[in-house]
Length: 371
Image (cartoon, rainbow, N blue to C red; front, side):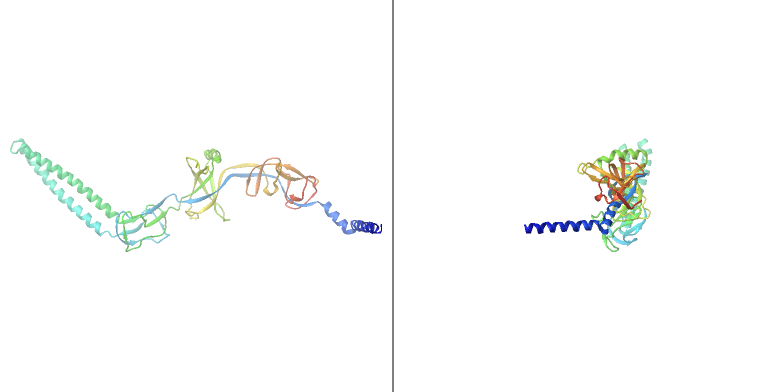
């Protein structure tokens, strides 16, 4: 009995202490804080114009690139550019020793002159014998032989003319010029080296820098929308280097591939950029946004306001009495930090953007910031 009596007294003391604490001034402050409401951040649902975009990743690709090779072999006598230099179409890149080709041209021209002289003589003989054969001073066989000789020499002259043209062409190949405006890469041959005609390795590779392509792929389900909006107006394409915060560079979608890649279920697109400042570099990876259109007056909330529950997406709406209500919403898409709401909210409603974990429907809130 004595032990039970002591336990009873101990419990009574504990309850007395709890009661005293609850009635103390400090306990009153805690209750006051609870009644003040849950601190939250909030934002107002608004209407604004939002671009409809397809985000993806792309790579810069030169519209033209040329691997420059020599068409004739010989010693490289001079190089006219430095590695990485911009060159214009028609600008000299390097020369090959022209002397052997000059000699070959002179030989071909001399042979042509010789055969032309023989042809003129054969034509004169044929003209003389033409009158004699009519008077039977020479036989028909003799005259026919002269005609055949004239025809052979005429064909020989044509062949000589072709040889001269070819020798002149080969001489022209000793000057290697740029076939396009672009930027040169690594130079693989220097003055004094021997270069081979149509060697496996190119002497230099030139990339066209302006204009330039950005190549990217999008899922095939986007193709109907792309074709629809592309038929209405040129589609703007914005790109930024991966991991960069610089302002985007804009171009125009100019190419849609004629087939979908069966392995990936994507379709390849290309946008053209003027790139006059050469900010885009061949082979560079970029963040790409293909702008299809701009949706006018859509309902928008910050994306952090949208929560995921067992029944789908919802937001906490702050009512005029500073209590919250849970509303189911439909999000059509996101853009940047915004969620575009297609159902469940109206412009002007206030939504909780931070502090949702402490809320239940009907809870009182206190807005810390955001409005």
